[in-house]
Structure formats: structure tokens, C-alpha cells
Image 1 (tube, rainbow, N blue to C red):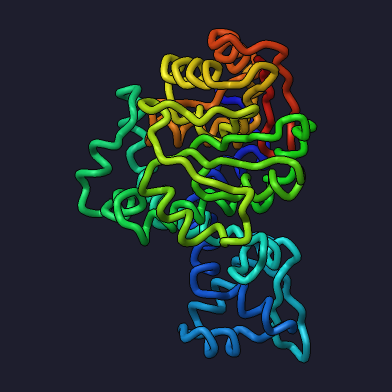
Image 2 (image 1 turned 45 degrees about the vertical axis):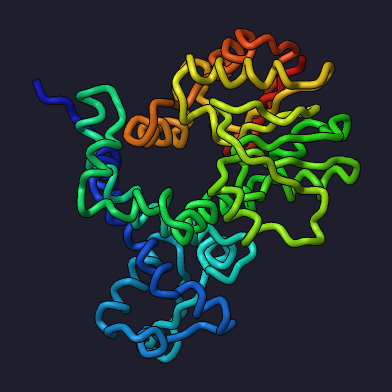
Length: 345
């Protein structure tokens, strides 16, 4: 028996079906430098002028610009029958490489790495495990391996992680008053973005970044100047080596990479080295308790299925992990995208 379905619902299905094109349009405009050109010019430009300055075809650029207007990534003005294009506020802020809050590294990572790896989603669902063995074996996915193996591509990966925190770091580091924790250890925080937020917000605190030797080497070279003496480094593997003693341990987007057993193992280790009265601060996207959303948490969890052994979790699931490791007085603060979870020893 047929059911009458409104056109808006049908349109939703069609939009989702073309979702991969929407993301690639945004990535392409960013990669070609459209948003940077318009940000730096400070004026609206014709498609012909943009194509000429960026070295593209006129016909291709015109279609790209018109599509970006439809996606509300660009604005258009008509003058003497000619279309003039300019950035929207969000494009100036997030998509231009020259913006201090640019998400360009994240966009390029998604375009070059995630975009191809989602092709393994069907296998991941069928098998219930990550697809890294297939991804590493595929000649078309050399760049994914490169993000973790070469120094140059390690920096690209860390830039991607940092781009998240230039938008969300201050909100997460100020979700709770951390001024009572003078010695902070950012576990797996090699990009240094949250460490910089910590020392900026809490003048009496110092931050030790604990990460793999190759990550520390890259971080020292690219992210911390000699003047930032309140940020120090400690090399090690947080599953194998003792962590530095601290008043507060920060785990930002770490636990969602691992299964429950390894999460409890890591948290138990942190509890052991944590000073009395100290704690752990977890930053992750939280699923609603009834698992009804938010959508970004479900989408991120699907990516975790492809790439890791972890997942996104509900507040009660994080509460259980922290309690199993010995942490108490567990508090949650929901942010605009990410949430902060504080447990005390």
C-alpha cells in the first residue's frame, strides 16, 4: 500500500544522496583559493576576474561560484546585469586559509583522506571493525599512511587537529574553572593548541604535553616558541610508559579512538599518577543519553568505525569509564559542538 510522502521529505533524500558533492564543492573552492582571494580583495569580483587570478577556466569557475552561492558559502550581487561574488562572514572566518580561525587544514584532510576512506564504510558495517588494513594496503590511500609516517604529513595531521581548537578550544578550557590545577598534562596533545589555551586562560598553570617522540619533535619545531616557557614536553606512549605526574590530565579527542577496555586502562593509569585532589578533563562530542543525536556525533562515530576501534559515547558511558578507573564527582558541561567532562580523584 502506497503512502503519500510530502515533496520536502523526498527532497531531503535527494539532498542526502548528493551530500558528497556538496562537501567536495566546498573543498574545491577552498583548495583553489576562492575564499582567500575574496577575503584579501575586500571587494566583490566577477567570475571572470576570479578565474583569471586563480588560473582556472571561466566556465568551471562560474559554475563553482554559483553552486557556492546556493550553499550559502558565497554571496552574489548584480550590477549592470553582471554577477559579482563575495565571501559570507562564515567563509571569511572558517574557509579562508589566511583567517586566524581557518578550518582549511581540516577541509583538506577531509578532502584528501576522509573522502576516499568513507568508501570502506559498507565493509566496516558488515564486519564491525575498522578498515585500516585495507586502507593502508590500497595504493590510492598512500596519503593516509603519510599523515602518520612522514614529518611533513605529520604536521598536516596536527594542523588539522589544531584547526578544531582555534574555534572550540577556549570554550572547552573555560567550561570548568581549572585555576586550581597548577600542573596540567595534555595527554596526546601534540598540536599544542589546547596547551596554549590553558596557559592563556590560567596564568598560574604550566602544561606538559605527553605524546609520541615523533609528534613531540614536530610540535617543538612548528608550534611552540622559546618564549612559551610554560609549555614543556614529555615523550612516551600513554599505553606503555608512565605519564608525568600532574594535577590535571587533559584527554582531548583521545578516548573516542579506543574501545572501553583500553579507555579504562588509560584512565586507571592517569588516576595512579594524578596528585590527590586532582582530576582528568575529557573533551569529546557527546551522544544524547537516548542516542537520538546530535547528528555530528553519529557521523563522527561512523568515521571512528572506519578508522579506529573506538566510538562516540553518551554521558553515562563516560561516567562508567571514569568510575571504573576510580574518578569521582564527575561533571559534564555541554558546549556548542564538543563537551567537557571533569572527574576528580
